[in-house]
Amino acid sequence: MDQTNQSRTRHPAGWIFVLVGLMLLAACAGTAGSDTLPPVAEPTAGESDAPKANDSTIPATLSGLLETEDDRPPALRALTSSWNTNWTKHLVPYDEILSGGPPRDGIRSIDAPTFERPEAAAGWLAGNEPVVVLELGDDARAYPLQIITWHEIVNDVVGGRPVVVTFCPLCNSALAFDSVINGQTFEFGVSGLLRNSDLIMYDRTTETLWQQFTGEAIIGDLAGERLDFLPASIVSFDDFRATHPDGRVLSRETGLRDPSSYSTNPYAGYDTYDHILSKGGNFALFRGELDGRLGAADRVVTVSLDEAGVDTAYPYAVLEEARVINDAPGGRDLVVFFKPGTASALGARIIADAEDIGATGVFDPVLDGRKLTFRFDGEQIVDEDTGSAWNILGRATAGPLAGQSLSPIVHGDHFWFSWAAFKPETIIYQP
Image (cartoon, rainbow, N blue to C red; front, top):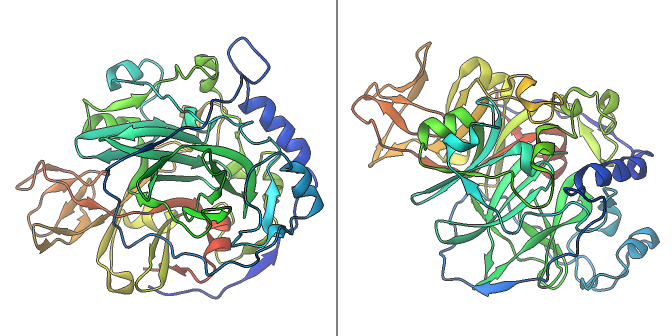
């Protein structure tokens, strides 16, 4: 792999963010039969003995508190005047925080999710539609992006473990976390604030603010704490259903919107620079520098290795050609899979009609003590050691290893512009 020359372009904050925010609030906060928001549920917290995730690919923590005083700019202070957040503790400068438009909980999290079997979901979910897949133990769940694009956060319990599943449409970032910190379970909501265009969550117990990209508490009493990442991936509903026919799919019966309204996409044209938020490549809710090494909305698979201090991005354009990449960034063996057949969640008004952008998976290639080497044989992904065929979720579907699964590695599928703002030293993989 190699790192191309870095080129960065200053990207000013867009003047239209207030207008855009009002549009998104109107779109995302609607309820069935009502144009007003219902009362927000009372915060909940509980105890859990669930084990913490332990994966070395979690992005590194930020260094130290910047300030111990409340020095919010006037606009941010006015916006958050009723919050109980401890503003004297923060890890990032307040001038990096931008309002996305909707107020706190204006985009409402799903806090009591219900699920249905894949055969039932097939009545309303097209096979090429993207879903976020989280599998813990024998519990495999799919969270359709047509739903969580409108809510951004799902508080759930998977395999007996309290989790939070998140999606930031502005960054194309689907990430899952263990929601237990120091033995206490936290419930999360959408703060309405952004940093580098990325979702800032808040917990409803301490009102600490958390950065989705890093899982770190950046402002508040818990500043410096970090959520443990859980391996999640975006694949097509067809691929989830084929691998987990008895899995569970998040239902459109959320109680927060008319179920039929989820069939339309509020971010149509965003990834083709044809949305008010991204018109002509001008990202209205981003006030950083654009890294010109890749196109701003180019999708990349990212892996961060704390112990080696290495961040690597695998461009979708390279993966689409190679289909398989065997790599060892920072000395850590991994394999990246790519498979066509998954539609963009941020392209067409009807997601199923959007461009096929494909899906990815990142795995540890070592199985039962043996390191496997993978290739694409023109039809499917196979390992050279046994000739077994593998699917996008890391399961062997044919051959001597049929039925066995590779261990997933925490990764992200992001737009380049936002990832590079958080990780400017990222190495871009080149074949």
